[in-house]
Image (cartoon, rainbow, N blue to C red):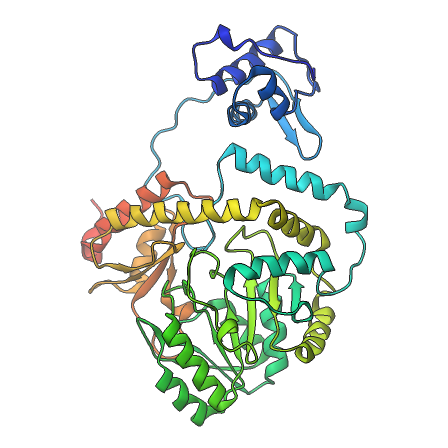
Length: 461
């Protein structure tokens, strides 16, 4: 029924609900049958002289009711008779939400989702070619897209220094494996990313954490550690650091680069969140390009399932062993994933997603600022998480356990500590599939706990 046109004048409901209602009505009346293909959303919007977003929302509503299904690259098809809407569920307990994974907020705007699907459909047109082996590091078109993306961070490396890799983790594993051998020392922030800890452990490397203040690692402590430990590299997560959310200001970045240059220490810059601030400080790869291995993952600024990262090596010569190491471990980045990233960068979808993530992260951080006790956490208005330094007498294990009793997942500081005794703190994530309503409910529960003692909130009546 590609010529199907609903008569919206028959309903006084919002137009998107009217579209879903009329799909259901025409299924009951036999005017639409299982398997019928509905008109493309843009075409129907033109026929009805209404906004495309309205039609997109109508189709999404119909899909929620079980009336239709969307097939990537094919269209929207009738699937069966309307099913009764379930009764409204009772309000959920304060928990039932996992706040342990640091993911970007997921888009829920029908127009944006439709745009993402259009990009995937276009990529699928070349599916047979994308199922073949590809050369390592990305095609010239993929590298052009990577260069355009990196240019947003003031990086303009030659194409032979840019590599498309299957995510930040494989890149980090390859880089550290090249720079150090078992038993060697790698410096990092005292509170660091757990993935770096896991990779160092797998490679048999010794992580030494550096003292931090509100601007990041202390340059004097960095210099002292270089003299004492002869490290093979400094691993650093300088923008919206996971988990503390701090961003190292440019003056401190310059000081860090000067110390690294003085001691000849390579910098491994994990810039997972570097694209989130619209006007963040220049990356270390722009300050000290000849010393820095720069990893720009797409998981945090577009979507966690988009397993691709752009790596900038210090010079062309470094690219040969790096490519060899990653080719041995991974063969290549997924051509299908890489092509989708390239497509979204070229057609502007990636920028639209990035703007959505920024706006939604700000809205969720505003919720936290409004609900949690003032001064009870550290955060950035654009971060996906909070770093809660617990008040006495709370301990991290007690707080994590209390949250778990209602299904709220948070992460204790133990997994982030590079050494020594972890602080009494937890990371609370605000992104991923959790809705604002779920996050608000969880934060309300946390706020109550933070103003009480563990004994008071765990009392059984």
